[in-house]
Every structure is written in structure tokens, then in C-alpha cells.
Length: 282
Image 1 (cartoon, rainbow, N blue to C red):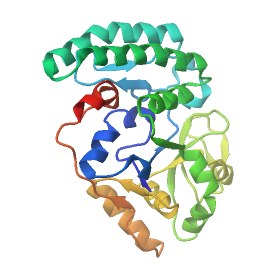
Image 2 (image 1 turned 60 degrees about the vertical axis):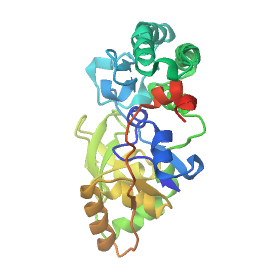
Image 3 (image 1 turned 120 degrees about the horizontal axis):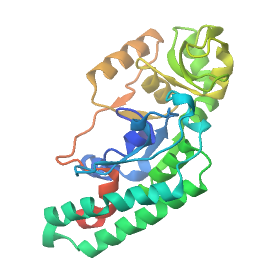
Image 4 (image 1 turned 180 degrees about the vertical axis):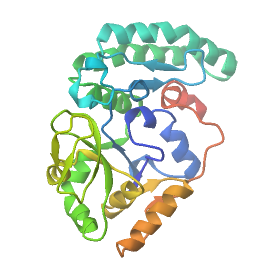
């Protein structure tokens, strides 16, 4: 199984470019792939839907950010409002469809593209209405625009495979971004320390509680190593990540290559563009 998670695993990052186009370029079936979705904070970049190279290039979903705490977990705030989402898609409609019609002309059935846009513009606000949290909403947007893509929340993978993490910790420490159970904000910790102080609220964080919950993101090459030991490979052409993963595997006495080098497609399109045009691009 291969994980599509080259430069990060939040829904906003996975939505930046079409997985279908990437897989087609590498001769890989969609059934072989799973997107592991990280927890994320409230920064505007993490609540965006990239549309493409248009005058309005992204939908930025609005949510209430309590006291300006953009480092708060997206599991702690409500999804955007249905009507606000609908208005954002209506505002972008002519910009997106106008350029697509200009670029592709008679090579496509434009009426089908317009129908797909309307379908998305009507469905995504309903997803917002039916989602309890921002994270749930963004995950559902990805699943809607990339049907057939297997997804898994990172904390579910980590919590179910925590024995692998404990095994690594016998050999070396693991840096991570964790969600503080007290203030629900992201904090930097090392998993070998029994107790850390949250860098945001200064309250103690029991590391074993974090490991058992899986509510953290391994850093400095450990993400790829841990997921590899769980049975997955990670798409990445990053020489830095390859070097980090190789050193970690050597340090813990394990064999294998956690990363999968892939061929870039000639022309990148977003997941949203593939949703509109996919059947007509073949």
C-alpha cells in the first residue's frame, strides 16, 4: 500500500493536486493508495480548497477562530456555515468556468463541466451543514471531490500501532507536534520524555497519553519510517526526507526503504479541476 502524502497530509494539501493524474503518470491503481489525513490547526492555508490558476485561485472557508488562536486543533471548532460556503462558490463560478471555456474551447463538452461545478457548489455547503467540526468538513470535502480514494486519520493509525512507536523509542527519541489535551493547541514535544510542558498553556502533558491517543504528528523523517513499519510506503522525491529516513532506519536497526520515488506528471491540475474535467481529459 502507498500513501499519498508527499508534502503533508492535511486535506488542504492533498487537494492541491490531482491524485488521479499523479497515479496515471506512474501506472498505479487508485486501490493501492491511501491518504492518511493529519490533524491540523485553524490557519487559513489549512481551510482552503485550491481551485487552480484562476483570478480566484482558492476557496477559503471561514470559521470562528476563538481569541485568534490559529494553532487550535480543527477538531475543536464548528464547520463553516452552509450559506457562506454557497456564496463563495457562487462568487468563483464565472471566474473558473470562464477560463476553462477559454482554455479548452471545443475540446470539451462545456455543459458537463458547468453541471459538475453546480453539483460541487450545491453539495459542499451541505457537507458543511452536516459536519460537526472543521476537520470533519475538510475530510468530507476531500472524499467528495476524490471518490474512491481510501482515507485514514493519522491518529487512528498511530494509536493502533503504538507498539511500533514504543519499539523505536527504545533506540532513539522522536520529535513531534502534538495536540495538548489541556488547551487543544499544537505543541512541540519529544516522545521519550515522560512529561512535557505545553509551549502554549504551560501545563504538563503526559507523553504516554499522547502516544496512546495518536494525536501527534511525527517529525524529522519519523513520519515516513513509522508509517513504513506499519506497512505503508510514502510518495516522496525529497532528498532530505530520504536522508532522514535512511539514517533513522539505520539507527533503529531496520531494513528497507520507507519512501517511493514517483514520476511527476507534465501538467499538474488540482483535485477540483480533475473533478470538473477528469472524464474529458482521458
